[in-house]
Length: 430
Image 1 (cartoon, rainbow, N blue to C red):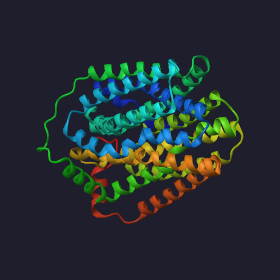
Image 2: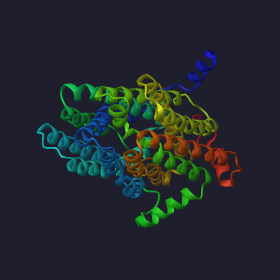
Image 3: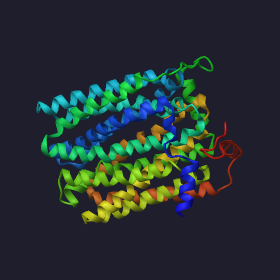
Image 4: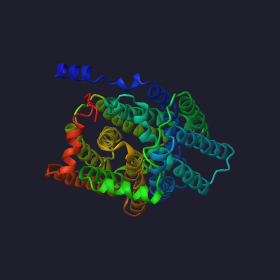
């Protein structure tokens, strides 16, 4: 067993994407920024819970920060296929830094109110609507050898989860000793690293493959491309379902920490830390994952793991058990996210990459605000336990449906896609 693992790591070095200079700059710059991002994310949840003690308000704040993604990300996808992704990222990251700075000033001067948090969250949602699909589709522009794309995506996910691991832990300490305002201030400062990395890159301008058409025409073209491919369609549907019922547990974590487990911000930080550990394990594991058929099977396994973990977490009243289970939940969530992202990025035509990744962003993040409202409403009425239990069952149903589709005969287009793809990390020019 050890020999097989060593052989796999030798054939597919886990950090091979870092040999590309632009990606290495982005990797380390974003690594600093993501710690601050997760500090802010967990701090906002605790701040709202402290001010309102309401699960519904937690869901509302999350809804306000994520609903713009559903509306605006398709337009961002068209822009990503038209304009310089590099310049767009510099703009979005600078605006995100400004948003965090304003939030820090409001909290540090003790002027913050819930409506201000909602308004600033909406602004950040608008920024992320453009940032996320552009950032996802920009990865391939930083990678000179396409066979390293899957490794770059997995490393990027490892980075996200490293931030998820460290950010909440640091936030929990800072909240206790220095207050929420310092978390927002440090997040604003952390954007300097990624902006500096972007400005240090050497990016060659790419000529458009054809003249730009009307936005709605290009949106329709991208939509038809996505829905006529059985593989793309089924992956996006599974991502949308899991994001609607599986991801909102994060917005309810303060209720589990402060209510069911009767803890404080340190309890919340421990839960988020454990969740981050599970996500990080999944990301590191995927850096050495080689074949596309394995990714398809892992996608099914991940959805089952996520659903089963949510069911167990919903009924746990023991702190140590909740830590173990939430680790499995984080593992399943990240495994599902990276596998779906890698499958789509490997299949998609380069001329439509921005638009497809905007659809992925809609499915992955755009449905989450409705899930937050859904879970927030029912958590207020029925309790957080039964609500998360139902969400876990839905994830398992989605995994079964996807597994049945994966075993069904594929149409000719799907077969061509997977044959052209071969193995995700092999040295084949598609």
